[in-house]
Every structure is written in C-alpha cells, then in structure tokens.
Image (cartoon, rainbow, N blue to C red; front, side, top):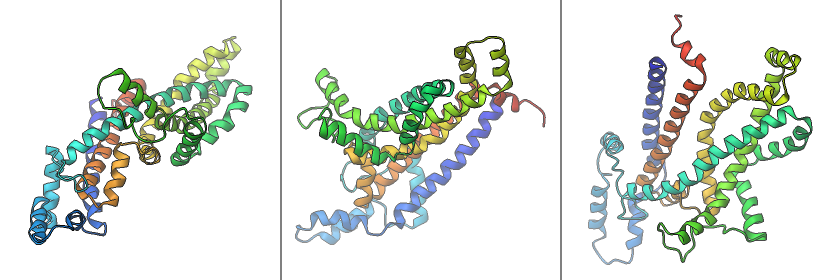
Length: 329
C-alpha cells in the first residue's frame, strides 16, 4: 500500500506543478491590460490617473519581471494569498472563492454520488433483464450523449418556463437573506434543484451504459455459467456480477471527475448560478488575472484530490492492486 501511495503521490505532484505553471502562463497570454480595465471604472476622475495607474501596478506586482511574478505566484499557492480581484476590487480573491465553492460542492457532490449509485444499479438490472434493457437503453444513450449546456437548456425550459415549478436563475430569491433559517434553506433547495438535476441526468446515462455492458460481460464468464447450472437465481448472479463490474466503474469515476467539473461550469452559466464556473466566465471577460488564477488552481486541486481519494478507495476494494506492489518483478 505504501508503494502504491508513493507512486500516486509522485504522479499527482508532477501534475500539480504542471497545472500551476500553465495556470500562471495562460492569463498572461490573454490580450488586454487588467490595470486599464480597472482604471476604466475611474474614467470620470479628473487628474491623478497616472498616479493611480502606478499605484495599482505596484499593488498587483505587475511591474516585476516575469520570473519574479512566477515565484510570487508559487508563494501565493502555499500561503493561499491570490491577491485582490480586479472586477470586485478591493475584495481578496480567496474570499470570493470561499463564497463560490459552497455552491459548487452543493451541486457537484450530490450529482456525482447519486448518479453513480443509481446509474450502476439501473445498468445492472438492464444487463440481466431483456425487456428493461430494450426499454431503457435508448434513454440512457440519449442522456449520455447530451451536452451539459443543452440538457440545462431543456431542463430549464420544461421545468422552469413551461411548468413553472422551479426558478431558472440564481442560487436564492432576491428577497432572501442567506442564513441558517428554514425559509432560506427551502428557497436555496428550490433554486438548487435544476442545476443538480441537469448534472445528475447527463452522468446517469453514462454510468448505466457502462454497468450494463460489464454485467453482460460478467454473465458470459465461466463462474456465472457455473452458478446458473447449479440453479442460482438471476439476482444472485447479478449480485456477483455487480461486484466485479463495479471495479471499472470506480476507475471511470476518477477519469470523469474532470469532465463533471467542466460540465458544472456550463450549467452554472446557463442557470446564472454563482459558483466557480460563473465566476470564471466573469474573470475571463474582465481580464481579471488574479481571480482567474485562483479559480483555476481551486478547480485543479479539487480534481486532483478527488482522483486521489478514488485511487485510495480502489486500492481497498480491489486486492489485486495491493498484491501487484508486493510481488517481485
């Protein structure tokens, strides 16, 4: 287990270094000048513009050489000091991320966990029941092939516009004040449901298809045929097939986390949900280097940590992983 964890840590450390470096370079390759963007807000001021421009340049350390900015950026990574946002000046970037990440996790975690559980269960039944397979597989393929933004538009139009059951914008009503009160919690859930439901539906189809194919493969194996010849029920055979088939699904979960996070960005834009994805779009449009870097780094860290947790879980549920590091080559 120690060898396995050390190998994974080295891989993730290299990935993190590359991600931080790319995170530093990309915003600086963008056209435009963030200081000029900020100064445009003070266009009505008379005099002092040059002094203000110099002060802002010093404040954001943009007067330093690129290599010095790169070292400062690494320092900010470890101190969690990402500077001050330009579009929400003078609010620190970390404060903006703290507010936004709550909305991301409230949508992502339930969507990932529930879609994985429900999708695998439905896929297992489809792989053992011909009638259910014929009835559900076209629907699963439809869900799996749907882009997030397209599904978000369909869900918003049907449940929000036509039926009017749920609001299609924001995280809570304009008259609500955030707090641990029942009225606000119910309002929050009312706005939360459509973004969550969109991500749940798209992920559900992929998990169901993957498990259905694994169950069909497992049912053709020798142990399934032997159990069937002994008179084992379909439920018992499906149970053993599910245990073996779920292992590749755990691996697939690690590979899909990045895609899920990417889908959350487009869903938040459609529903104007105040998560990191929505904040990232605002940062790109307003050339906010510092907010963009902070959000990129937060998303990369979330994906790497989630993948590492999945790798640890896989090590415990599949003994072959542990044995592969104990055998002599």
